[in-house]
Amino acid sequence: MGQKKGDIYLSAWDVDTTTTDSPDLLDPFGRVYSKGIIELSRKDRTANGRLVIDIINRKFKITLEYSEIDGSSLEDYETYFDLDQTLYLTIFTDDGVSESYIVIMSPFDRTRWKLGGNGLWNNVSFVFEEV
Image 1 (tube, helix red, strand yellow):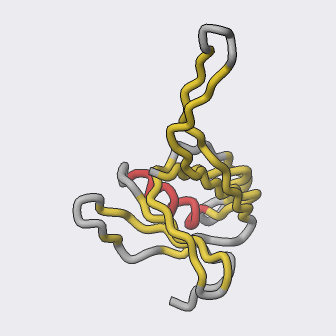
Image 2: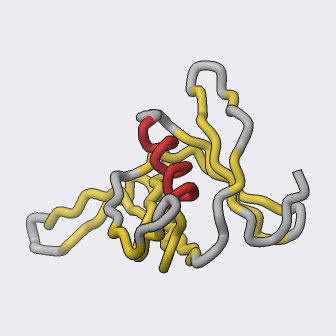
Image 3: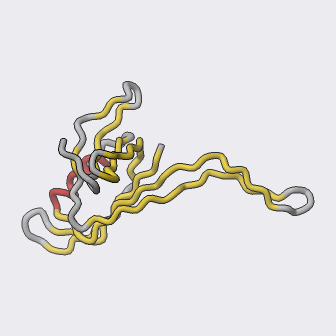
């Protein structure tokens, strides 16, 4: 694969064998990439009323938001969502340099903007949470 900065690949992840299928390059047209943190924590107050926080873990939440996406690219995401399993997401931050995550894909909404061909959809967000 000729990976370059900004490329994002998605593949199925087999938890039992820790292997992936052949990855698919996700459509970059109209895409905005964002990365956030999900913090798992417990908050409570001590006897004197002081707030204490116990941070259990931090995981990443990755969002791929499309201002518009064509029907065939949308079908690629639908196919991965329909697998109902963990996925392997690889993001190239520089030419040949990548970050990889084992993720779960969240359900997503879509709005058809134009008919014709496979259609054109807008304001579609795909959210992946690190396992």
